[in-house]
Length: 333
Image 1 (cartoon, one colour):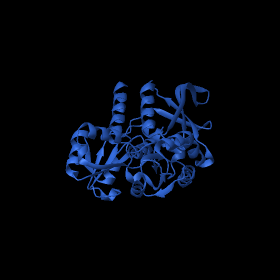
Image 2 (cartoon, one colour; image 1 turned 45 degrees about the vertical axis):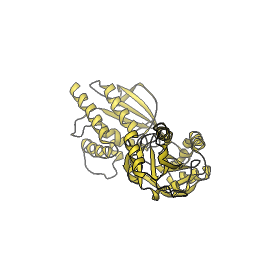
Image 3 (tube, helix red, strand yellow; image 1 turned 90 degrees about the horizontal axis):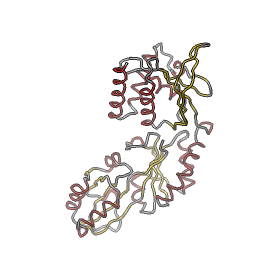
Image 4 (tube, one colour; image 1 turned 135 degrees about the vertical axis):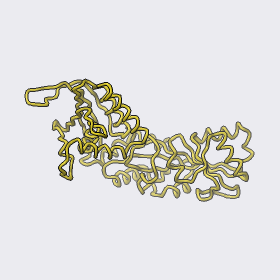
């Protein structure tokens, strides 16, 4: 479960040969000409956004760029490729902009940002302003409540962003030590949830259902697996069944986790696959407890509704992989 990761680097290139430099980045480094927001959306922690400007600037800003090229390589790789390819004569000057960090938030979002701002002596900026003001020894932190293991859409970032007057290594070191504590302090009651998920399948397909469950939880970055083991679940009074139990540590409320489990109990067309029972503080969370609308729907009908909501949080390739897992599970029965 990621609490923060690196964002893209920003490289300002001044040249009198904009077209030639752009062509080099495209052909030699598989760069993609883009606009700022599309490039920012596609960028990962391995990416660099290159702003190519005319040579006659004392300090370049994002708005000065004649071309913006997204390169899925570190800025050091780009510069070494330019030097080793003997095209450095095309460049008048190169400046490295601030590093960037993407941080996930939970609980009271503004309280968390205020704590990070105070701890790291940050200044509130919008993203482009931060890139323009910062230099190679500064770091921009952008916050989101979405998963951060891949690209994050600009619309999914919170409005508040921080420019930190510290180099990226120092910021990373502080966040590694303190991010978990800062997030915990901003959660409701300042605590995480320790949940138990019991898997029961009358057909004995425990491994396949476990793999489905862990696949979705990892894609959603729901929490941390604290352990797993076989246990007995008393489905009826004096009658026990063998189940496989997963202990989950998460800041996602139990009722939201239960919706995900209900969605995974059925396929999209209503086929029952498994029982996922959820326990919090030794109390079983019943499926009717999570339905705030009080509609008269069956569990299968609610499962379809929750699955649609689940699909909105997954990428198309993740949905396809999940459905293939379920297809194989049904065929094996």
